[in-house]
Length: 199
Image (cartoon, rainbow, N blue to C red; front, side, top):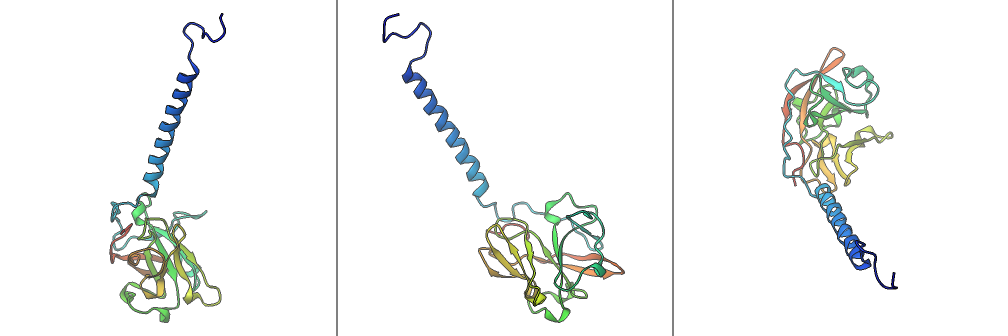
């Protein structure tokens, strides 16, 4: 074979390099589209439709006892847990944060008719981009504890109707009524406002 000639049926360096460049660009475009889908805010409301009804019993959403009824006697002032209505755990719109605070700590715009014996409940879905919120307990003063979404640091005050106290969330997370019945809790209403992303 003469130097500089390529074998029959072979591929030139130019074609090989061109093929690699095309494959790289397609891979980069696919990665960009995937990233865009993740970071693009969901549409307002994003299809979150809760199926909670008055009388539904609260059950634990996470941990070793997930699915077990919430026992009010097991919660102290300053505690919070994620809960679902019994039998309706497959709907992500039903997740709720149940909080126990001092009954005298609540201020407007908290709907007091939806609070019972210091138990208050709010949707656990952040109104910014729909992440699940977390509880930040202040051991020194439980009534100064707050709800936070660690995705983008939106913060909500549970003693003031989940008013936004920091971050990009546009509106409070919606309250929902709860009532103690013996050593269990039941929902007494639907949500007081929209749930899910509201941007």
